[in-house]
Length: 175
Ligand SMILES: CC(C)(COP(=O)(O)OP(=O)(O)OC[C@H]1O[C@@H](n2cnc3c(N)ncnc32)[C@H](O)[C@@H]1OP(=O)(O)O)[C@@H](O)C(=O)NCCC(=O)NCCS
Image (cartoon, rainbow, N blue to C red; front, top):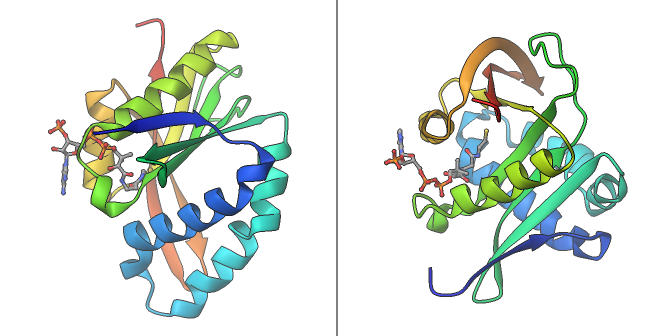
């Protein structure tokens, strides 16, 4: 990468994060939606500028942006405290989002964004980080496996008329 910058996002970045969230979700999962309205309704409910601004402002969330030659190319979101049944360590963090625009995939940029999240989680005293990944998202699965995540469970999530099947994976910073 010629000129890659990764930095934390603030509420002033809400528009950038929102547009990246919509574009990258569409690029990654848009083909799974038979009805485009299900996708746009999800965007309105989840990735509006107001929702993202509110999410960035929460003490429990940390967002990052990645820029290549000043152009926004990806974002990430850490939920600092996010316990779930499948993870024994109740002090765990969640890697809730890590998304790059499609022209920037497979260039090890994801690893740099992920490292920023790991460093933050470790710095605030976390020993475990978990995330959900679609079972058919083979690139992401390969990426997480390479970075030491192991599968500990599964769950379903519906958006409109589509139901998605996820693995729950975790990484322990102590191993
Ligand atoms: C997941 C993601 C953050 C990883 O970042 P990245 O910079 O692309 O990752 P890397 O370049 O370090 O590695 C990608 C790995 O996927 C592999 N890969 C690429 N295409 C693949 C495919 N179709 N099937 C399986 N593995 C694939 C690459 O070979 C590479 O693994 P390797 O280093 O062992 O060869 C990024 O790909 C991304 O944003 N994807 C789209 C959004 C997404 O799926 N986010 C995660 C949601 S849970």
